Image 1 (cartoon, rainbow, N blue to C red):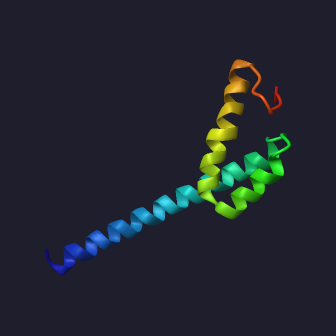
Image 2 (image 1 turned 120 degrees about the vertical axis):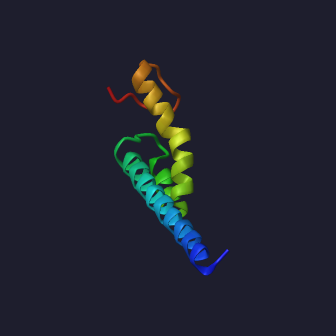
Length: 87
């Protein structure tokens, strides 16, 4: 391996890191907006504080714990305990 190929590998890794970071930040902002505007449960303030403190990791947990069940509820018309209908 010469210096040129090592530099190219480093640039590719850095570029991938930047792209993944941008995607994670966008996802975090979208989940934060959802928590602020759509989440009307008694845990709304807690979720917002947790997402601000722990960033994209908390946003990922929020997605599977809150947003996905709410989306399923809106799609099927069923109720999920601790949530309200947005119809």
